[in-house]
Length: 370
Image (cartoon, rainbow, N blue to C red; front, side, top):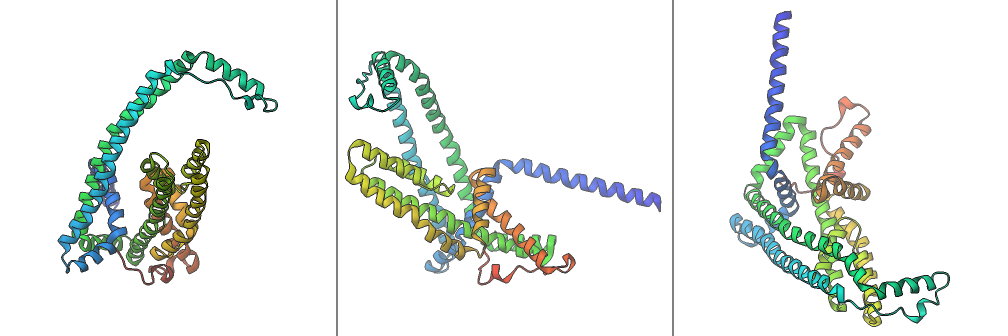
């Protein structure tokens, strides 16, 4: 019996080692595609109801609906990508031209009111005169920074191509998932059931709800706020409004908000001597900065009946840990862990935990394919 036990132990150990090596090898081979696959899954889960609605409008033709759902992201990529490349090249030329003119830069003398500032006015005015008297020194000091910025812009142009390729791969995988969504969802449910029974299926449903809640509450709010901010920048006549609007999207998704961009634009308008449009933009900024307090909770509750602090913590923590992909991964992980923890605590007996998800988290939810 001891020999048989040792034989079984060796066979089990070798089987586990082989299985682990197979999993690691598979992930290693697929590692260049993992980010695109995860992004595609998030997009498909979040937009699955839109696909079904478009499919109904097209008379039940899934193929046409898939074409529409894949062409729209491609158009959203091509247009901003072209504008970004043009803007980067244009900015690089401007910086290079500015660097060549730094040697002939004439700095005016300090204004008279500067010396009137208590304590530091005379020192600031004296320093200003020193700098104004030797512009070549200023040019020599600024030139290395300008070259660094130009190099960064050129690297950014090269990085845009990689981002575009990753985006195209994501759209392609998303199209395949759109076409075979029900089959993919059935496989994931069976896999989850094989791992953890009904509780595993409930975790899959909860993950879909968390993804949809983040997509509706965080991303949609960011797009709405950035669009309103961009409208204000365009109307107020702020230059490079398109680039600033894109920055507003990124800051809003990161839960910082468009305040830094809008406040800087307001200060620039006042400094330029345009107080009317600066005041108009200030009022508009107050509206833009407060509208998310109404829109975001409403949209998150429509996507998933989860605590708002849990969603926000998942978004911010996921962003800091995994980058922009963590915006969706963080809330999913926290939502599943939170639900399992609450279910285990409320049951009182770990061996008697109801494997089905809580009704408050799943009532009325349509399960999207993962």
